[in-house]
Length: 237
Image 1 (cartoon, rainbow, N blue to C red):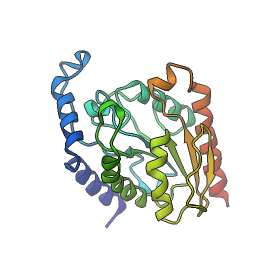
Image 2: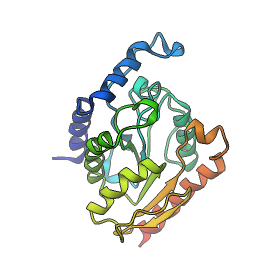
Image 3: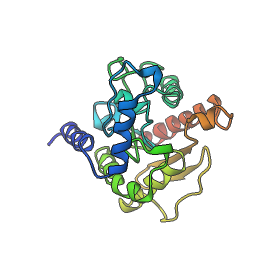
Image 4: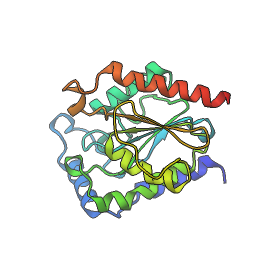
């Protein structure tokens, strides 16, 4: 079966998932009560799938975030879309040449990604952005299934410590790490993997980080510059 069909089947499985009752209740509650600014909009309210280059074989950069935002992706139905975190991410992707436009406002806004796929550890918006350990454990098999579909990935980018915590065991289980010890999280951190692959780390572009100056645009851009260099080098080996 073509990888594109496998991705479509996996997306259908994700959006129909009900494994975490607390998260499903919260997502539906947010979709019903809505934020005042979006009172006239219909919320997505379902688990969020990944988004990226439609050709799995072209994907070189796989970005992993934490979870959809209650009034961002949980509203718009597309990961990192309709909130300030998405504003930061897609601006940086556009500048680095991975996106055809710097904004992501809704599912039909014409945004296209090149050589990139974006996903998250937890597929439902969690209260206070804090999924429980049990919810994390229940959901990460979807991330593992996604990673398996992008065999040509050269760089994994984890946005934040929880993204790293969810991603690292998957890399270990799939024989992609040189050690089982999870690297210490630091912005710009880099770890060599097997098969000419690399792991990069970045602060999550959340308001908590961007409003305080903990993450600046030059800091974020430098991560994507490094990803591009690693992809270029690995492709030439």
